[in-house]
Amino acid sequence: MEIIRDVQSILDAIGKKKPKILGIDGIDGVGKTAIAVKLDLEFGYVRVSLDDHLEKNQKGYFNFIDYKKLKSKIELCKGKFLVIEGVLLQKVLNKIGVKPNFMIYMSNIVWVYDWLEDFQGKYYGLKLEEIIDEVEKGVNKLNEATTPDAKPYKMSGFRREIYEYTYAYLPWEKADLVYVES
Image 1 (cartoon, rainbow, N blue to C red):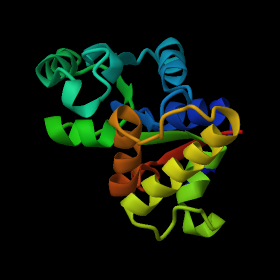
Image 2 (spheres, one colour):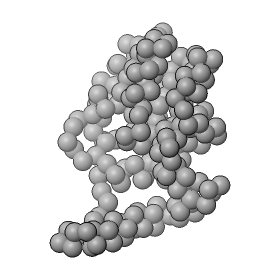
Image 3 (cartoon, rainbow, N blue to C red):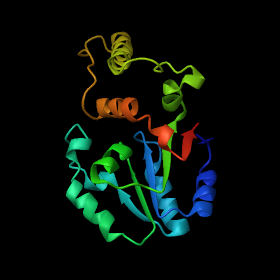
């Protein structure tokens, strides 16, 4: 796994390899779309975003993607350079049988390191429910200190999906590049 911290390294790697189908996976809010747009401008990649195929406001992700529409969009792009980006990407692509030639995983500095043995990550070696329990306790402790009337936090929906996906797939392990924003 190669960890990089600058966008130019991504562009350089893609420029050298020119993968036909490129996947950009990662947690929400780390810049997957921005990188995909740069790849379109720099190299002419057609961008397919999972978010564009998502039924909005469902408090979830994987079960609310229009897979038929997504697969159709990808098939329309056959023969073109294609970048597919989104949360839970490897799980989604497995469902529709699409294999990228190159995969980038994007994260913030804390998220990926929390999962890695090499960095003594706080989640490494724990079971999924132990991780979720730890997060819930932390949020509830913060809520008690700042908002004593808040209902107890119970992880669910989209946030839980991200933890479940990360736990099951360890997506950085299947990535050619891991981009960690500082």
